[in-house]
Length: 194
Image (cartoon, rainbow, N blue to C red):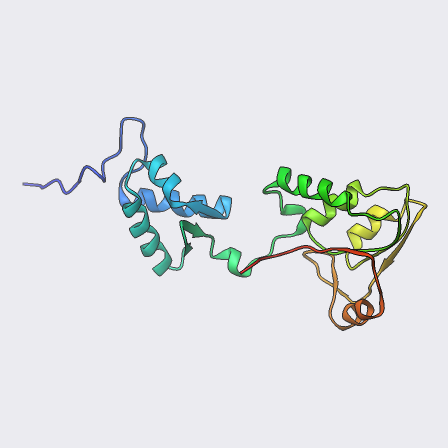
């Protein structure tokens, strides 16, 4: 005689949504890895289980080192130590484009500006006005290359070791160069805020 240990919460529905715990775990981990994060409430709704079930699943998956729980959901463990190349940072492109457009209003008619590294700053560089007499300082080779063909801009790089992921110049030379320049406006990228 066999006993069925399947509960209502563990059986798949008629649309084939995963409800076995192991299948839910696979969906949760795949979502975090593909999107970089997940929202517990949205996953509970999608998988048609309680948010408490998702919360318990996330606790278990965090203990296994497969993700990291944050308030309201989880993020990929890789996000804690992995930095994607700037060209691979394609999430939130519309928002980044809006930020870049808004930043254009802060570009002075003349003077000096600094453009930091990052995907939003790269979008700003692509939109950067060519009709102004500006000294543009950047620590990012790709941004310098995007701007150097505009004849009214004087483009300067800071120097230093070049990071392969961002093509940004970093370390002592870059810091020393930063300490010696004065700019009217600086556009800075942000990796994280705590």
